[in-house]
Amino acid sequence: MEAHSGADQADERAIRAVVAPWLEASGANDLPRLSSLMAEDVVFLTPGRPPMQGRAAFLASAGEGQGQYRIAATGEVQEVQVSEDWAYCWSQLVVTVTPLATGTPIRRRGPTLTILRREPDGRWVLFRDANMLTLEAST
Image 1 (cartoon, rainbow, N blue to C red):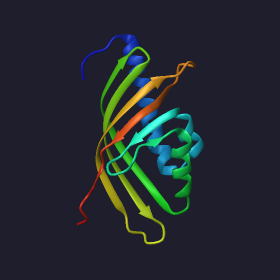
Image 2: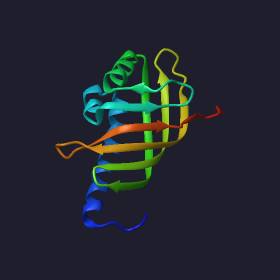
Image 3: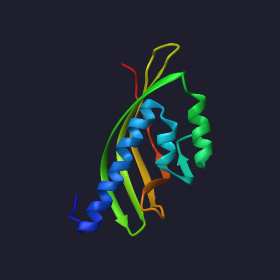
Image 4: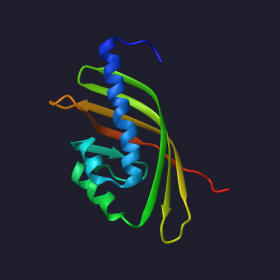
């Protein structure tokens, strides 16, 4: 990754500090923590589904799955770029969803592209997220 100014490095660290807790909170199904990491008007894009628009829609969807599955997510941020109050990063993710009823894990992997916005209080939050994970073939 290319060198950045001191301010950009601080922003990059702050953005990376959104991604790691997002993965942790997803695994714990910690809805309050997830809520704090996204903008009210967030939009999630995933293959084969209509856009999920707004924090409330995301939290409702995540809440429906509580107690039905376990999520384990790992990822590595590949690039972060910052321009004033906007930033993007792309990451490589692996997400394993295990339905508690069957115990048969489903694994998806691939890239995501995330746009972040700096809120008036200085926090970086997810604003748009394009998740391009695909189903991993079972072995």
